[in-house]
Image 1 (cartoon, rainbow, N blue to C red):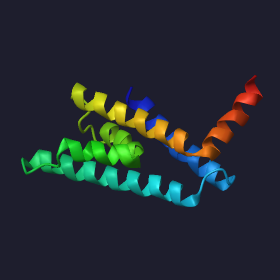
Image 2 (cartoon, rainbow, N blue to C red; image 1 turned 90 degrees about the vertical axis):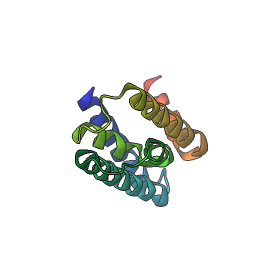
Image 3 (cartoon, helix red, strand yellow; image 1 turned 90 degrees about the horizontal axis):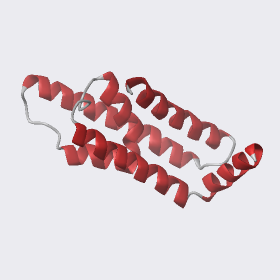
Image 4 (spheres, helix red, strand yellow; image 1 turned 180 degrees about the vertical axis):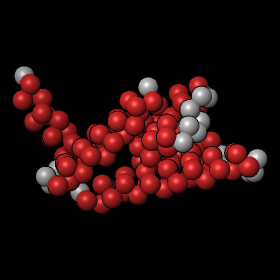
Length: 125
């Protein structure tokens, strides 16, 4: 599961970057995903550091909100690479839900993504 999460997040970021390069997605959307992912990764790292020191921590709902609005690739990578919040089942389940909701909204609100998925489907059927 550890490598799957990392690969899935990286595959998503690379795929949307390529889709942007091919003019299927606006550059602002791709920049948003990359920046939110980097910020989310950094906040996970800060929270992990605070956990080790026994200091005040970042609230889980804030971590989930960052994932929900587009930082989930960074959250998934940080969770696995930093081994942070990776054993708490309830946290992992909510993170998975935020990923599903974000990707669903991404597809639903992006006509370009729907068009691209339709074109890909035609290649296989």
